[in-house]
Image 1 (spheres, rainbow, N blue to C red):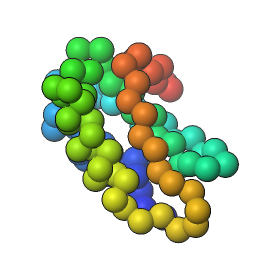
Image 2 (cartoon, rainbow, N blue to C red; image 1 turned 60 degrees about the vertical axis):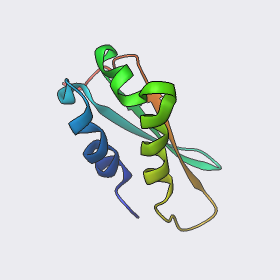
Image 3 (cartoon, rainbow, N blue to C red; image 1 turned 180 degrees about the horizontal axis):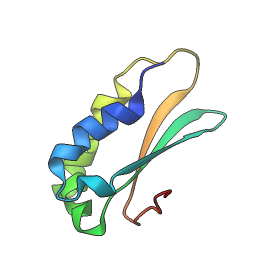
Image 4 (cartoon, rainbow, N blue to C red; image 1 turned 60 degrees about the horizontal axis):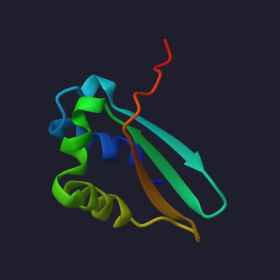
Length: 86
């Protein structure tokens, strides 16, 4: 299976001022492979963009990767800072 976490980080890291705060959490449901992207609150505007254009472009790239089976990929952008495991 494609490493969606690495793909998302490769796309988003150059866009933000706080790349160390990026956290991608995979969650598998019955219908989706969900990837929750947590960004620093100062970087939310950079990731979403004007009228959501940057977020839509990121989703278009991620969703274009083929997945085996009937499940689909979903990207959720979360503006609350995630707690890192230490």
